[in-house]
Length: 254
Image (cartoon, rainbow, N blue to C red; front, side, top):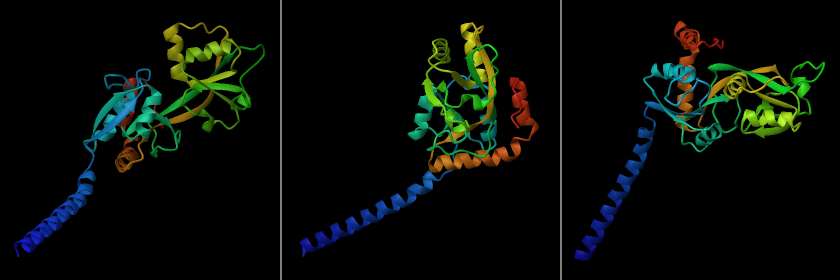
């Protein structure tokens, strides 16, 4: 009889433990669905737009958008390729900044926060004037690693990836590439920082590209993207939004 009672007690305990475990597992999604209180951003340092101390036009703007939902920014500074990898690995919520659909694993919002001027850098040639992206057809065209600019050009090119603008200029001088394409601000900053001799080089406009937050493909990333679009819907037309750009001496991107 005692053995029977002990077996029944053990069975009852096992059922209770199982039910407790099920209740615990069912309760977990409720905690996971709690509203976000912060957003973890990863970014390279972009010419005063994103600084190591968390200041700069882009951080100020993103902070203003999410502050409307009392969401705070957590910022980690990495080289660009590492920021992309952090979001791919779901170790961060979004990276700053990406071209639209630059990577197929990220979630992209409707609203951009800046517009980027892309320029072609090339060697001067007597009588030659750059005629637009059509001149790039089948040429050796370089850009910074992981930028994937071929998605935005309407002509086929021979892709070369470089790690620095300086190395691109050296390759242009050596005749190893025909053009380098990059952001106007990046090129200008590099030339200024190195006091680069531009006598043998020319710059020409290629295209505008919107800059976006690129979110991790997670439920949290989806929620933060939704919040961004909902807040930007009205905020991008506001005087407060425009004032952020004015203080930074930047052009309004809409």
